[in-house]
Structure formats: C-alpha cells, structure tokens
Length: 280
Image (tube, rainbow, N blue to C red; front, side):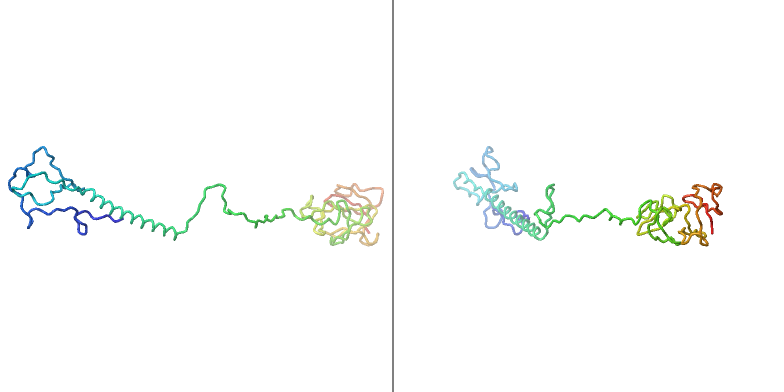
C-alpha cells in the first residue's frame, strides 16, 4: 500500500493555506490596538477561537485586517473546513487501501491458480479410493502344502531281492525262496535310517532301509569283502553256502549247533547275527 505524502510537500495540495503577512500587495496590521480590533478583545474570550488542522497549527483569520475607522462588529464565523479536509484525506486513504487490497488479492488469486493445491484429510473414514470400483480381484492363494508323494514301491516288512551290486530286483518273500533283505522303513524324503549303519537302497525316490534276512536250509552266495548277499543259483555249487544255524547277537561260532555239521561261520552287523554254514 502506498502511503500519501505529508502536507506541504511537493505534489501534495496545500489545504486552506492563507497568504502570509508582510507579503507585497497586502496591508499591514495596525501597530496599535483600537477598540473592537481582534487584538484588543477582552481576556474572557477564548484565545483559540478558530479551528485547527490535524497538525495542531492555528488557522489565522481569512481576509485582510479591518482598517481604522471601519465599523467594529464581531467577525463572521469562519467556515469549518476541518471535516472537508478530513473527508478528502480519508477518501484518498480509502482509495489507496482499496487499490492495495485489490492488488494483494489479485496476486494471491494468481498464485493460487498457478500452484497446485494439496488436499489432505484427517477423517478416519476417507480412503484413497473415494469412488466404488468393480475392478477388485481376490488375492492369489499360494499353495503352502506339498504335493503328496507317489506310493511306495514296497511295504515295511516286505522281503526284497537284489543283485550283487544292490540293484532292486523286486519283491520276494521271507520264506527263503526269493528275497534276502527285509524292509525296515521307507522314506520319500530320503533321510537317514534309524540305524545309520544299516544297508539301504533307493527305489522310485524312496530310501529303503534294510536288514539281512536269511533262512535255514537255503543256499546263498556271500560276497568276498563288501557287497550284497544274493540267493544261490544252484545249491552246493562252488562258492555257495548252505545255512545250518542262525545265532542272533553272537560274536563268534561258539554258540553254533552241535547237532548238524557245519564248517564255517559268518558274523554280520546291523543287526548283529552269526550264520553257521556249510561252505562249498
């Protein structure tokens, strides 16, 4: 807002400024008072009978002084122009204020139009989707359970047949006619056996934990060193053995039978057992 210049400055009109005394063309006031002159008024009259401007300066009487010999009378009451002056000043100030407010309001309006407005809300019921939508789709359900394993090729307790390398040849029987190992457990996750030292093979993804299972009076072929026990293709053939007695948990042949003839014993572990045999 622009502040108007104070009175009596260049560019500002001088309000009610009377002519100065002692200027050329104006008569001089009398040097001595005469009856009825303003300077010889009774002391009971107020000393400030004329209105003052807002600056507090007394306004001198308008017009020339009364010449000597003129009829004396009360001076005409001066015209009070203070209200007019104040009205004009107030109007100018009001115009300036209105112009400044309009300018400032226009500046804010333009700024608001040029700047994006961020809308925020503190309501707990408002969401980022104020309008209904039919594009909702349920979340994808992730399967957390594993697929069921395939059925086991054998059952616990079955006796199976293998070759000398341990290859699975099929399910036999436990009467000695076909089959040399009994299945103790089947494990699709292929974990360790209950007895980690027991023999095992893997068949169709299953680990089969086994135990040597031989039958008396049947013929077998024992490996030389490490290997797998297999059924003899012909009993009493060279390299085969004929099982005469079986002693579980024994450490040697001392507990083998005395009723039948045998010439050799074999001790196996996991489980521990002694086979008393006739070797050919």
